[in-house]
Image (cartoon, rainbow, N blue to C red; front, side, top):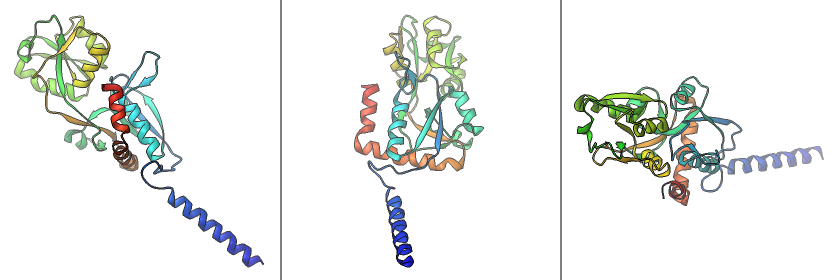
Length: 259
C-alpha cells in the first residue's frame, strides 16, 4: 500500500513538473514566471516617449511598450524616473537593471559598455528655431549659441557641426527647458530628436519651427542594460517586441502617440 501511495505521489509531482515546463512559450502565454522585479530607469521628460500628462500620469511610447512587452513575457518591473544622466549612472552602479529613454543605438555606446536590445524606433536629430528668428538653415548660426541636452546624440550631432558653422553649444538637463530657452531668445536654436521636437512644438503650441535639411541619418532607439548578468532582460525585451509587432500592439501604441 505504501509503495502505491509513493508511486501516486511521484506521478503527481511529474505532472506538476510538466505543467510548469509547458508555461514557457510565445504569443499570449508569458515567457517568464520569474519572481524578480526588474528596476528600469528612465528620463524625466522626453515627449512623446516619456512624460507626464495633464493628469500628472507618467506616460509615453516607451512606457506603453515596456508594459506590453512585460505582459507578453511575464516579468515584473518597477520604473524609476531619474533623468537621462542619472539613469545611466544608476545602471552603471547596479542600482537599476536596465534603461529605456529613447537611447540611440551607437557603436560608441556599445564600446562604453551599453548592451542594447533590438531597435524599437528609428529617429534622427535635427534643428529647430523660433518662428521669428529669421534663421533658415545651419548657415545662420554663425556666432550664436545653440541648445542641446547633455550626453545625447543631439549633443554629439551639434558638436560635430559647431566648428564648421561657427556656433557654440549650451547644455541643458531636459528638453522642455531648452525649448523655452529658444522661445525666450537665450539661444538661437536647439538640436534634439526630431519626433521629440515635433511632439513638443505641436502639443505645447510653441512658436518654433523645425528646419528642413538640418537632420542627420536616422538611428534606432534601444532598450539598454550595462551588466552582462542582465542579458536575460534584453532577451525578454527582444522576444516581447517581436511578439507585439506581430500581434499589432506595437502599431497601436505608436498610433496612440504619433497619429
